[in-house]
Every structure is written in structure tokens, then in C-alpha cells.
Length: 93
Image (tube, rainbow, N blue to C red; front, side, top):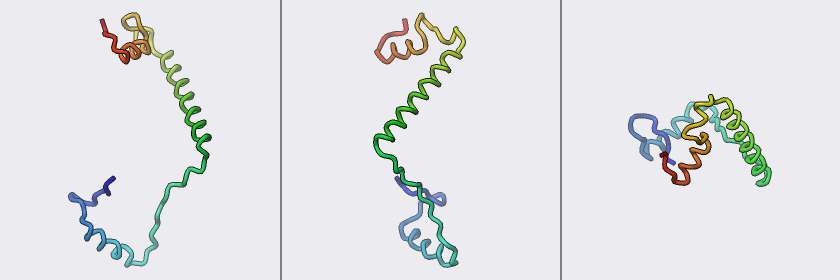
């Protein structure tokens, strides 16, 4: 992952090195924000992920039920059936 450029062209390494002491010359404290470490165990992260997927599945089911009947059924198959058929390589006859 490359560093974001500050101007139209990326800075060279020498320009970055020169900028470092210049930014600290005024005596202002340097604030660094670090994302907090995820302290959950692997099994807890797995359980949380599965719970999130189950919630998404319930949301998608609600969304599918909210669709009008004409949008739900095409060519004798439902939206989900159409997607499954396409993923299995069936044609749209």
C-alpha cells in the first residue's frame, strides 16, 4: 500500500525526510491515532461473524418478502432461483 500524496505528484523520500523535522520544529505535540487491537479470541470472532451473517440472511429474507410479486418471480423462478440457476450455468430461455 503506497502512501497518499500531498500534492499533484508524490513526494520523494528526501522530501518526506525533510518534512519530518520541520513538522516538529514548532513544538506542537504529535498526535498519533492507532486503531484499538481486537482482543477477542478466534472463536469469539468466528461466533460474531456467524451471528452477523445470520442477521444479514434475515434482512435479505425480509427484503425478498417486501418485493412486489412481479419482481419476485421471473420466468417461473424466484429471484433466488434465478441467481442459483445462473451460478450453475443454466440459460435464461
